[in-house]
Image 1 (cartoon, rainbow, N blue to C red):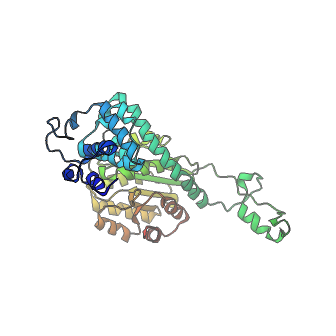
Image 2: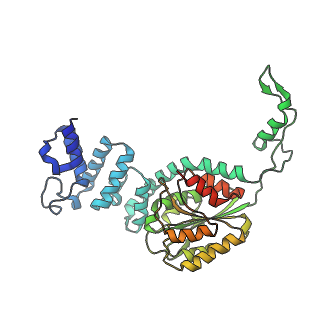
Image 3: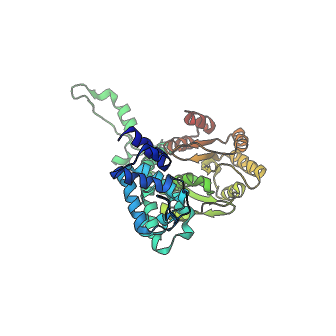
Length: 382
């Protein structure tokens, strides 16, 4: 590809003077032009690439999806698809099973499906669920093992008992207590005595409340938060509640067994009454010293800010380990109400943006009784 051809693809039809494109480059140019060229005329009234954008059939959309997949990696395809929906209003990508079945799943696409779920026709709903499930399963692969390890490693396992089963073997204490029996010839420790952890308690040792702001700006955080809630709910040692809110509060705990159902219980958009949501969550606290409260919100409060601060202070004073995640996203970079965040930090409630990869460390710190404000500063710093 020549330098002129590269610039022609970057600049689009505004740079026709750079020369014509041919073959595959022409097909690529047309595929990009559908989304990124500015329409010179209304759809259906001419123009080399503007014609029919609002009236494209499922067949043409499917062909376009095939074109961009053939030229770009999946992460770039996901961006182009989202731009198609947001810039050109190509909601047919979501409303026709033939096209929706060909899209590249992404967190952004899940957010769009959640916001438009009331408009998705019946014949497309199952395909939409399959797209959401593909994203959910990918997130679970990335997060489940580390979250479970963080919880298991943080729970009190100091008591020992003689249940002689491999899953209960305390490797650290067994090796440490038998180092005197190291055999240099075989280069191994020959244990004389084994130590075992007590059988894990069947009761719920901790109460974890995940409370998520479902306003439109929090879409990515809601997706990660819902999957996190579902993973935590699968752990026997935790009593997990998942709450979503806008100006109303909805308890989705009953849907925790299936994160796809959980996400389809979310309705993105609307106002924000954080204080009302926190008031509901206060009613779920039965042992403050064994409760972790994770509030996922950008803190743009549409309700009573002063009352919200008092409620968070009361939770903190009772011993609840409360934290505010201003964003739970791949970038971890939030836009938020800095004034309200500062007031909460002054109460000892950390407010921070968090990537999914750091979440297990925060959860582990909360379970171990770490200074969460200091932990947030340390882990959130570049």
